[in-house]
Image (cartoon, rainbow, N blue to C red; front, side, top):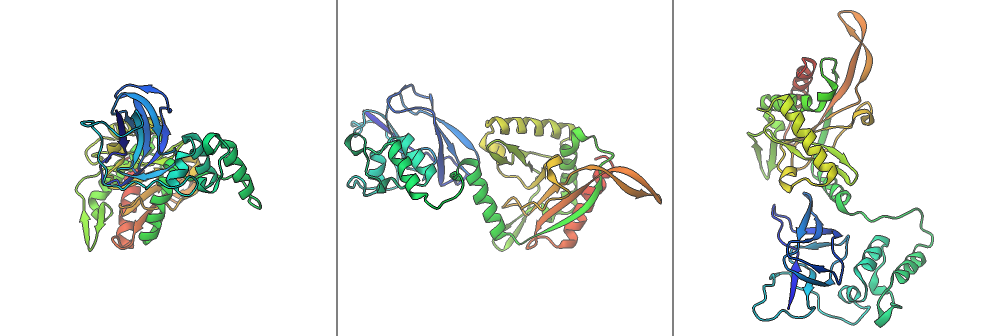
Length: 364
């Protein structure tokens, strides 16, 4: 009796997922609820447990492939039609019809192991174009690498597939750049009154309070309507080995700087460990980003769609400034606000930015 496991509906209106890593191999005996596969969506990486016990008889979708909800991923148990009464997920997605070996993607999958399919995907090789030299015409890793070498004549550099978090970032940023007519406002800010260990938390708190005064930046554009949000859930950009993620700090208007700082630290640790829950990455109303010393003098961040504004902090360093007619040294950096000009006028963005600067210079 076989169990055909399909990509489940992971919620949040997600229609597809990328197979980032199989946690089992063909022929392996697994128990129900054992770790089965990691799926990357545009929200997070989710580890899915096995819905059934048995031997993994066939892995259908290779690592690196993006497939819609309802696609069969793996067969657990005997690789045959389920017996009467077996619990098998029902998919509305039509499966490809069988075809002669080497003539269709489905047939190509049947003629290669998941490892070989993953290597072919990474090297940009179409398995359907390769005559396999393995048993029964199976395509081997050697076949794939030979085809890649033959097809790369005249090419340059090392090629790497756009996948995982990097693929999601690319899609998200492309959409934001395409759909949002953005403008960036920049001003200097004296950070001398801020403890550097509480920098991001102080900036997040200053933003939350300033958003209450300039609500256009805490909004959404929904068709022909501007939706003004009455919650202040601020995303904080965190760099990880897999790419940039933006976990969300909830209720920043009522939380103290200390509470915000502790939550940012917790979320950042989870982000770097890859253990963030999907709910910790969604529904932010505004975003703050700071690259520290790597940030350069200033940055022009891209709006985190579907938000309408984002604030970045440039590099903070001692600089000569004039105070009360005298040249003195102060810890100075830049504040940049990128905003959606369809929703926010330049004057209002400036009001918001100056309100943030004033709060920071007052120590938060």
